[in-house]
Image (cartoon, rainbow, N blue to C red; front, side, top):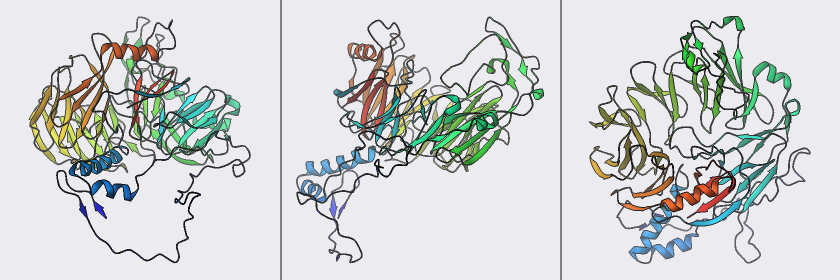
Length: 563
C-alpha cells in the first residue's frame, strides 16, 4: 500500500498480506477483452422511467477515470521525478473536490474544445453565469432544454427537454465577489405556463423525476415557486394584513432621491417543498425591520430576472431573493435574511438585522453584522454558532485544503488585520492596509489578500502574518471577479479599471512570481466572442467556472474548455 508522504519526504510502501477472497462477495464479471468493467451509472432508461418523466437524451454521463494501482506503483518505483508525478496526481485529484480547484493554471491557458449554442441567463456585466456545476459536469439552460457537458471534452453528456419558460436552479454561483461556483448534487427545473407549471428534479447522471404539476392554490397561499437547493421548490410572499404597513415619513421623488423611513411593514414567509412530491419540508418567517426609503424598490420574487425597478414610489412589499447551493438569501424593504438549505434562519440577533451572510469555502457560514459596530458571527454547517468576533471576518474565496483553516478580517477600527482559526481563536494581528481586505485564496502556507483600493496583491504567511511577497501590477480600481488555484499557483480573473477589459493573471502562491498574464488582445477577443454578434453594442465579460478540475469559459454564445 502506498502512503502519501509529507511534502519533500520519500514515498513509503507498506507490505500487507493478501486477503483471501470473501465467499459472500459476488464475483465481478470480466469484460469482453478480459478487463474488469465498472458498474454503469444509475441512469433511468425509458422502460423504468415513470410514464410522464421527460427522457434525457444521450445519458452516458461522464465518469472520472482513476489510474490503476499498477500504473501508480510503476511510476512511484521509478525516479524521484516519478515520485513527484505521483504526488502531483494526488494534488490534482484533491483539487477536483474543491470549489475553484483546477488541475493546472501555472502555464498560459489555451482553447481545448468549443461548444457553440445558446446558454441561457448569463449575467453579462459581471463575468457571472447561471450555469451550474452538477456533480462533475456543467449544466445549463439552452432554449427549452437542459444541457450537460463533459468538462474534459465538451461533448454533451445528456440533454433533458423542458417546456416553455424554464427556470432551473439552484445556481452554484454565489453573489459574493470572487466566490467560485460550487457543485450541487441535484437540480430542480420549473417550466410551463403559470396555470400548468411543472417541476422536475435532475441528477448528475441525467436521471429525471416524473413531472409534478404545481398547485395554483399553493401559489396563492405561499407565493410564487422558484428552484431551491437540495431538490426543493421555494415559495415566498409577504404575509399579514396590508393594514400593518406604515410608510412613516418615507418618500421618493421621480428624480431618484428617497428620504425617510418606513415605520412598519409586513413579514416575509419562506416555504420549502419537495420538488418531487410537493410535501412541505420547512417554513421560516422573516420579521419586517424598519427600512430606509431607498431600500424599498420594486424588487420582485415573482420575476427574479426582472431586476430592480424605480418608479418614484416607495414599495414597502418589495423583496427579492437568491438561492445558491448552500444558502437562500432574502433582501428588500425591511428584509435582510439568510436561510440554510435545512430551513435555519441565520442571524446574530433574535430578529433579523442589517447585515450580510456568506457561505465559507471550507464549510459553514459568516454573518457580517452592519447594524452597529462591525462584528461577525461564524456558524458551522449545521447553523450552530461557532464564535462571535468584532470586525468583519471572511474565509478565503478558494483554498486547497493543505493548510490550517483560516478566517481573516479587520477589527472594528479598520486599523488591524487579524487571523483566526476556524473555531475563532486568534492566530495573529498585523497592521491593516485598509479597513476592508479581500481574502482571495489560501494555498499551502500562504494566504493571498488584496486591500480595498490597494495597488498590490500580497501573500502572507498563514502562521504569522509575515509578508512573504507582493505583486504590484494591478491598478487600484482593478476588480477581482474570480479566483482559482491548482494548489501551487493562483489564477486571478480581473476587470481592468481603465479599459474595462478582463485579464487572467497567474501567480506562484509561495513566491508571488508572475507566471503569466493575458494580453489585452486576447482579452478583447474573448469579450467579442462572448457578445451575441458583430452588431451587438454591449460586449460581455465571459465567466470562468471550474468543473471537476477543468476551467471552462461560459458566455451566452457557448462554452470553451481551457487548459
